[in-house]
Length: 324
Image 1 (tube, rainbow, N blue to C red):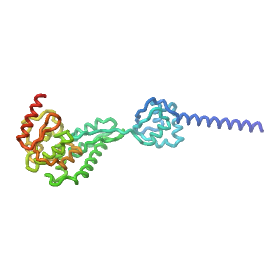
Image 2: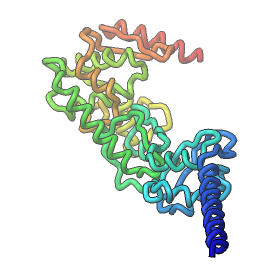
Image 3: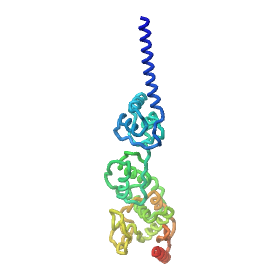
Image 4: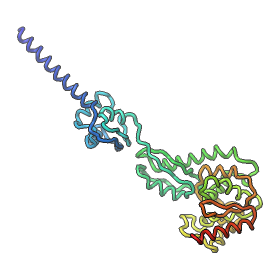
């Protein structure tokens, strides 16, 4: 009887040691550095289960044995906390660390930059080409309703969500800036301010000039002088897509409420999507008496108070242009 009990005890101890040894082995493998040679971004598709994640990690050299990974995940209780998305895994990350990264939901941050001065159709075209965004865009918003900026997103976000955020950012910008506008401006509504901002945005790409260009147009509006803005002519001729040729003298006579060479005041609606700086410029235009400006050959413009002075600037610009 004593011999039997001794044998039984030895078997129990051996089994316990075996189980303990296995547990130690799993723990060591689960917490040890992986063979991932360098940090990289890895996408976990929506709907991927724990076994699917294990297979992805095996292919990426983060784990060697899926069963050990599955055991480690379940023991730690994180099997229901793993989230789909795009994550960055550092060099030599352990399986345990990789699981914690997935459970954190801290996905890779991507960015899309929308330049100022694009029409809404052009913005939609750009968003449709952005890698990592999904779905379709319901419709093309009206020009002047989207705020060009850099927007952060995560892999798998919808294209429509970017458009919605651009609309919301635009509305927030207007709400912030409109109340602080200068007094006695020659327009009364936010819509009119956005129209003028869209023209200023297309007239100059030089940030330091925006308020000065806005000042010229404000001065013209005050004396009922036509704006005579070339970008409005281009929009009048081709409202659906960007005009891909230079304007002609005949174009300047094109009958349209958007052509500010033939129609007084502001066009009916924005001709592009202006940025924050252009909108701010028309609310706070430079206080000058300038009525004219023309390209100066350096990327900026030469400004003038009188037509005589302006004509000299035009002649100078033509000599530069012809020389080029």
